[in-house]
Image (cartoon, rainbow, N blue to C red; front, top):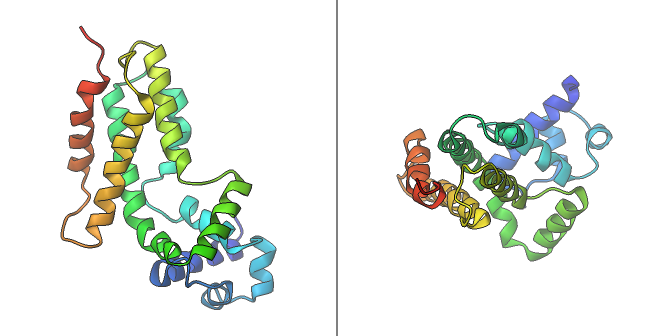
Length: 196
């Protein structure tokens, strides 16, 4: 990654975190990165690309990398340990990104444009749920998750709880902790574990 690109992504993360995605402009990001807008557009074609770069490169927990390893983890290690690692990464990711993304919901036109841009790029938050559900289905095929378990529902329960705690942490004194990730998975285990 070039120094200029890294500087632009760092500036975008700072501005988006402070102002929210909806109120952030490429002009502000360029100013914060100490570069021209033209130079910014040499590296990124739109604000959505910058947002995706921030999500991939400047958020804690390395959720995207972890999701990319799930297929290799099937049949190896404890399912509960893998899901706990996913939950911890999701908690950190949602905690960091919620303030950036929340503002977009206040502007329907911008939200529609953002949704279109994500669809065009094959990106979006649904891919997190899909990756976890696919992992659970693969573990079902390996006999390590109950055959009658609903993988999509289990992924939604785990990730939805992580997202809700991240949301609450910005409005209350509730925090997202590693112990919470363990507790969430422990409560899901009866729905996962094969009989006997």
